[in-house]
Image (cartoon, rainbow, N blue to C red; front, top):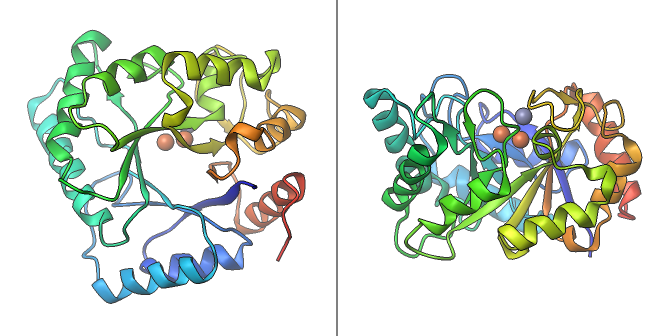
Length: 281
Ligand code: FE
Ligand code: FE
Ligand code: ZN
């Protein structure tokens, strides 16, 4: 088994266009924003377009796609109107995700903006409980965060505390961001397996569904969240290569969120495929 690899694509041209673009870049999965990442406005989904993508990704043996919620979504905001708008976005996005069944919807747990993580955690869980629809095929992923500002999800314990408050099991997993956990204080240089063991002990590796593969501009524990290209940051090529090839992470979608143009993504995708022993198309 090997990993699936891809990057963030623009959804402005519709669903099928993203599948084709991913293939052009040499990818076999991809990420996309469900709405304007800095605003929240959502485009109408065309059913034929969604169906066409579904067939396309099946035909080309893609791994699961990893959609990303807008950055403006904060279901534990202190301001009631932002919180309510965010809860509504989350709920609507799950319904929208079902147009292309069986994929992942990743979101940042949120920022507690001075209320404290203890107050925010039940709000996040409640927003998830409010959004889950019976028999949904989409898995909601909580992203591990760097702990910048008042971000919730800065430790495996905080992620686990949210999951524990979700009513229905089987709908929630975790997306591990290699830059964020490093910035959060989990030291990959002590061994990939020691970080994964810790994840397993606190959350359970069965919850780990996807990886955001990024190098970090800063040192471990910096809580900065500045991504670097693969091999050009403080984590470095050797460690990232070991993450890509870790037996416990095979079969999962890996999404690059590195500062690159298309050329750069093509290069990184083919480099990672080569690391991972995958045939390059
Ligand atoms: Fe993210
Ligand atoms: Fe990320
Ligand atoms: Zn980040």
